[in-house]
Image (tube, rainbow, N blue to C red):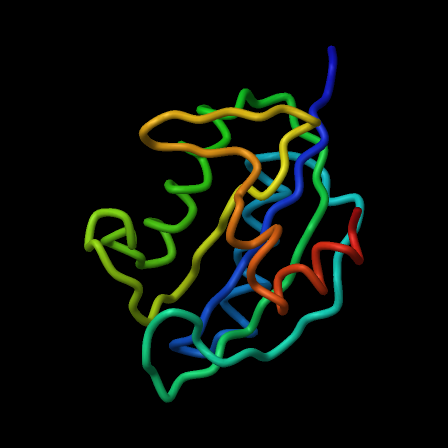
Length: 138
């Protein structure tokens, strides 16, 4: 079987963010695939919305057999199982969240659909904190 090389970005800023990120990492390994590289864990101010809650962020590189859409479905399942009910896309704005898991890169593909855009442009090219930790796992 072939494996896909994927970079994900995880973030949390409520209800013990570091524990939330660690729980999500554990769920990723159980349900998605092996984590082969991790960035350092960093603390960042919220981006594109106001909040007093800082984020705990990490980038990871994983190997998975899942297709991009199946991967997205499983990531959303992990987010929901951890208590995230509404996605930012559904709300039309960013807000505090227990966990957020974004697909940044998936092999070397470029893909655009209504629900999924790869690569994740904002995190890959515009957000300095994300660029910093993504480089650590590339």
